[in-house]
Amino acid sequence: MSTNLLTLLPELILTLTAVLVMLLEPLLAAGASRKPLGWLAILGSSGSGVAALYQLRVVHALGTLTGFYGTIQVDAFSIFFHLLIASVVVTTLLASLDYFPPDQVSHAGEYFALVLFGATGMMFMTSSVELLMVFIGLEISSISTYILAGFRKGRATASESAIKYFLLGSFATAFLLYGIALCFGATGSTAIAAIGAGMAVTKTPLFGWLAVGMVLIGLGFKVSAAPFHVWTPDVYQGAPAPVVGLMSTAPKAAAFAVLLRFLFEAAPTDRHHWAPLIAIMAVASMTIGNLGALLQSDAKRLLAYSSIAHAGYLLVAFTAPEPLAVSTACFYTAAYAAMNVGAFVVLTQLSGFSEQLRTIDDLTGLALRRPALSAFLAFFLLSLIGIPFTGGFFGKFYVFSAAVHSGYTWLAIVGLANSGLACFYYLRLLTALYARPTADTVRDLPMPRGISVPAGLALIATAAATLLLGILPNRILSLAQRAAPATVAQCIMDR
Amino acid sequence: MTTVPIAYYLVLAAILFCIGIAAFLIKRNVITIFMSIELMLNAVNLTFVAFAHLWRQISGQIFVFFVMVVAAAEAAVGLAIIIALFRARQTLNVDEVDLLRN
Image 1: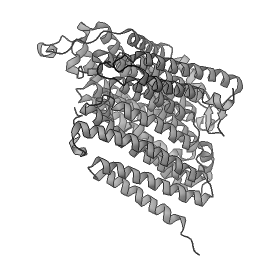
Image 2: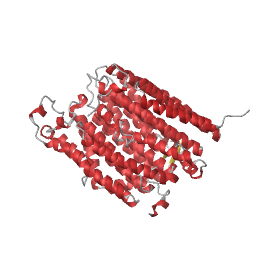
Image 3: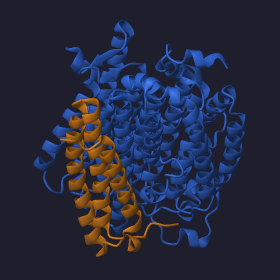
Image 4: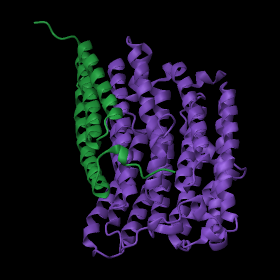
C-alpha cells in the first residue's frame, strides 16, 4: 500500500462506509428498521479504529508517516486522537441503534452516514499539519454536526438548536479563517511547521499576534470555552441526546488537538502572549460553566454547562510546556470523553426519541424504577465530579499538577475551588436519582426504558474506560506521553 | 502605472470583516445574519489574495478557492436549516426563536 493511502486509511474506511450507508438507505422500505445500517456504520467505525492501530504499528516500526506533500502527518499524537474519535463514534452509534422509532423517523440511515462523515472530518483535523487541510476537516465535521443537531425534524426546538449551532459555528469559522490568512500574511505559508519557523523571524509580528488571537477565538467557539460558549446550552438542549454525547466530546477533542498543534508548533515564539490569554479563558470557562450549571433544571443543559467547565479545566493544561501539556490534555480529553459519552448514553436510553424525561424532577426516583441505568449515571456523575478511582479524578489531578509545575499555582487553586463548586450541581442530580419520588413527580411520566443490548455494551465500555483511567492511569498516560513530541520544546522544561 | 499598495487591500478587508461582525451582532433576520457571515468570509478571501500577491505565493489564491467551495457547501446546509426553522416557527426573526431556555 502506498504511504499516501496508509496515512488516510482510517478516514478512507469511514468515508467509504458512510457512502455505502447512504447508497443502501433508499433501497430499504419506507417503514423498515434502519438498524442494519447502524450495524454497518459500527462495523466501519470499528474498522477505522483497527486501521488506526495498524498505523500505530507502522509508526512504531518506521517512525512518523507523512503523505500528500507533507500536509498529512501520522504520528502517535494523531493516532491517539483517531482511536479516541473512533471509540466515541462506535459508542454513540451503539447507543443510537434503538433511538429512532421506524414509524416516526424514516431516514435514520442518513443519521448513521452523517456521524461517519463527521468523524472523518474530526480525524482529518487531527492528522493535518497544513492549515488548509485543518480548515477542510473542521468544516466536514462542523457541517455534519449542524445537520445532526437538528435531526429531530419538525420539532421547533430541533431547528432552533440547529440554526444557533450553524450561525455561531460559521461565525467562528470566519474568525479561524481570518487567523489563518494573517498567519499566511506574517510568514508566507499555511503549513504549521513553516509558520512556526516564519513566526520567529517575521518582519510583521503584529500579524502574528492577531493571527494567534483570531485562531484562539475561532477554536474557542468550537471547544465552547468562555467567553465564546453562549451557544452551548441552547444547542445541547435542543439536539438529540446521542448527538450531544458525540458533539460534546469528539469534535472538541479534535479542536483541542488542532489548538495544541497550532499553539505549540506554529506559535511557540508568542507563548508569552497567548499563555495569559489561555489562562484567562480557562478561569472564565470554569467559573461561568460551574456557576451556570448551578441554576439549571434540564439535565442536558446542566451537562452543557458542565462541558463548558471541563473545557476550562482542559485549557489549564495549555499553560504547561509542550510535552507535559500535550500528555495531560490528551489524558483529559480521553477521560472526559469516556464519562460524558457514558452519561449521554444513559440519557439517550431513558426515554428514547421522545426525550420526555428531561429535567431533574423527571429523573427523581429513577433508581427505584431503573436501578441499573441510574447506577451507571451515578458512576459517570461521580467521575465528572472527580472522585478518586475514576478517570475524572486523574484527569483533573494531572491537569492541575501540570499547572503547578509550570508556575501557574493560582490557576490550579482556582481550578480546585471550581471543582468544589461543581460538586453541588452534580450531587443535586445524583441525590435526585436516589430520592423517593413525590406524588407529583411521578404524575404521568412514561416508564423509563430498560437497557437494550447495544446500549448495554456502550454503557459497559464507557464505564470500563472511566474505571480503567481511574485505576490504571499510567497505562493511558504513557500512551499520551508518546503522543507528545519529545524533541521540541525540551528547552522550556528546565523550570 | 502606479499600483495600489497592499495595505489598502488589507485595510479594506479588515473593514469588511468588522462590518460583517457588526451586522452579525445587530441584524435580527436570519438570512441577513447569514449574509453577514458570507461578508466576513469574503473579507478573508480578499486578505488571502492580497497576501498571495505580497508573497508571490500561489497557495494563498488556492486557499480562496477552497474557502469558496466550503462556503457554498455551508450555504446549502444553512439555507436548508433556515427552511426547517421557518416551517417549524413561521418566523425568521432570531429574537422570536427562543424556546430553548432554562
